[in-house]
Image 1: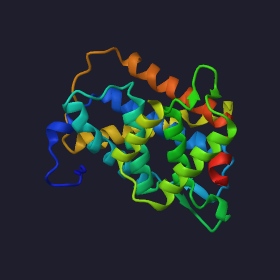
Image 2: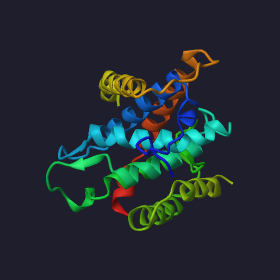
Image 3: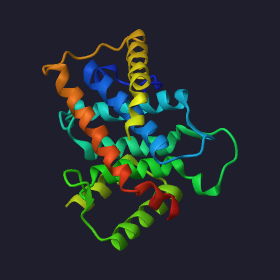
Image 4: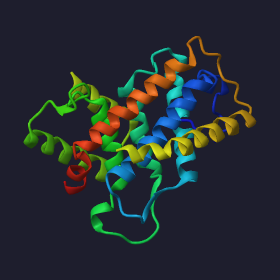
Length: 168
Length: 65
C-alpha cells in the first residue's frame, strides 16, 4: 500500500482527484471529527491532533486514488469512502489524550471510526433518523464491531466488506 | 447542535492549507467537470446526516461496549 511519503507513489494516481472534491471531503471529515468531540461531550483532555490528522488525510487519498484511477469511486460512495477513512483513522489515531482520562475514553478513535461505519450502513436510516434494527441487535453489532476495531488488525478492505455485508 | 457550526471556518482553513501544501509538493489536480456546489452539497448533507446520527446517542453505546 502506497502513501504520498513513499518514493514509489505514483503521482498520476493522486492527480485523479479534483481540488474542490478533496477540499470538501477533508473539510467535512474535520467537521465530523470536531462535532464528534463536541456533541459527544468528550472530556477536554481529548483533542484532534492537527499533524496526525494531516498525515491521516494523506494516507486516505493515497489509498483512494487508485479507485479514482479505475473509475470505481464517486463522491457519493460513502461505503468505500467511510470504510477507508475509518481504517486509516484507527491506524493513525488523530484523537490524542493531553492527559490521563477515564478508561471509558481509551478507544475514542475506534468509536469515531465506528460512527463513520454506522453512517454508511443501512442500520441507520438517514431520512427518518432512526435505526432499522432493534436496540438489542444494534448493541450486539456495536459490540462485535468495537471488538474488531479495538483488538484486531483492521484493514480498509475488511471494513468495506463488513459494510457491504451489512448493507446486502 | 448549533454550536457545532463554530468549527466550520476552522475546518475550511485546514482543508485550504492541506490542498495548498499538496500543490507546493507538485500535485496537479484534475479539472472538475461538475459545478463546485455539487461537492459542497454532498459534504454538507453528510455532515448533517452525521450530526443526526450523533443525536441518537450512538457514541454512548460505542463507549460502553
